[in-house]
Length: 507
Picture 1 (tube, one colour):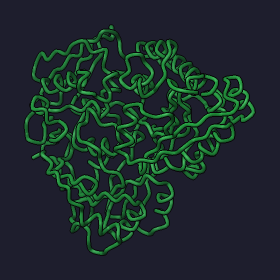
Picture 2 (cartoon, one colour):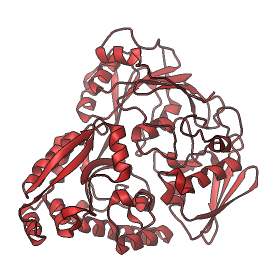
Picture 3 (cartoon, helix red, strand yellow):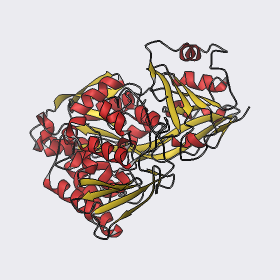
């Protein structure tokens, strides 16, 4: 149990559904959810994955110590309780005594320790390593207690631990070195098989401590064409689907028997600039780009207006009104003047990188930005590439500009320290850093007063948008569609599909 069978076959189910062939779906069962999405996972190691498609799959199989609920509060997962010491330098967890991996082995403190030691090991290449650098040592005094000893108070640490990038893996899996090829988690489902870019088969984890899972399993078809997903929903070949394209999502309510769930999310669309190379090393050039971008126009063209223009911080508790940020009202004359002051009155040429499929708006975003920046003499060549190629290039920071959809978090430090601190493991992707950003991030990390933290991160937002290493664009929605047989799903502002653990399917 827990070891997926890898195949290079193309799923007949997915192909037939994409072509609209009737009767090709997996036979329906009262307790089996037939599901579809357009982007498949790019890998199975929860500590390394950054693609949303991977995280959505892995969060059904693995669990972190805690999770974020639908109200953006920290809720129990593997841990049943937790407590910071009075000085904020010790964080103690009590594990759920019933928490087990899908093979029946109890989740032990040694598994937690091994998982975080793996994340902190620089050789692992863990996506969220920068979130946990305050951890100096980990104690396991008994079979249900884990104590994290910290170098300093670290208010956002608990939020960071709610990510699937902080999933708890069995120590035995880590020791065997099979974390990327074998799945063995304590989540609500077991990954029985994975045919890349075709389908996944999940079965209920009978050992899950989170409660009874009403489903026997989930059969997921990967259908890159989301119009084919809608067709499969219409013909009941698919019961539930994740929709990325707002053009398709807006068609769902027009179909009797189908329901669209539309949830604002913390994830953000952004234009990332390489501020370490060429013209964009000049602050005034980056500022000119910010002033030339009409964010609302990008949102309207790429997402049909389905969202809102955003600053860097997307969580309600810390968000700054965009009207208070640098050049959020387009100003072409100011942009041209800044270009001239920087010595680029004749403009320059660059490439803008975008992925196909996720988000489906990437090509449109790149095209609108290409048109807008042409107004100030910037000649952009659009590079479209498959998601796995894009991610590889993005992780290397190998781009002039790129449009990206990045994950939001409930805490500003957890959301951005990997980019905007000197020790951030994705600082090379951010392509920019300065003492002010680093200092503000560190201040916000240790400050315990909520009002003071809000002021600190408001200053962070104003500073980073003024120096303009990235141009934040907008936030959108997550869309899920289901037929009348499906009930119990609750969407989450993080975009998580963990709510599938509570779904039931009727005859």
